[in-house]
Image (cartoon, rainbow, N blue to C red):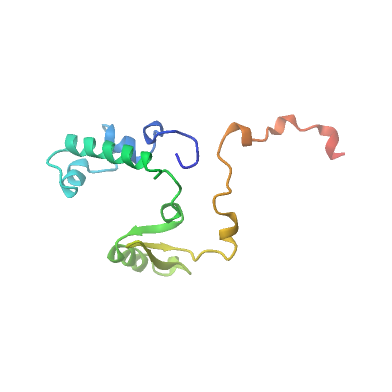
Length: 142
């Protein structure tokens, strides 16, 4: 959604929305009964209904905007979780640092000095932004 490829999370076949709302028969990634119980629901159907409502409310409130904590981080979650991931990765972590924003901890690279100049300027993925290489005039490279 954030890249402009789909208009609703249900349209993206490989996302968490579909995994929760229409779980596959095999090779499930999410333990729905456990997640439902952790979220305070008595069964999966109630959790799925609540999940749909949360997503719709978030979409109406403009929550589809890109949040780089999720796309630019190795780990996102509680301080304990992120510290555990960092410890388990050891030297593979490199220069990555733990940061906190709105009570959410992340493990990621420090922001490059010019990143703020390019935030939000990435074009939407679409056919209009594609360059068809077959249309190059062979005479332009002579």
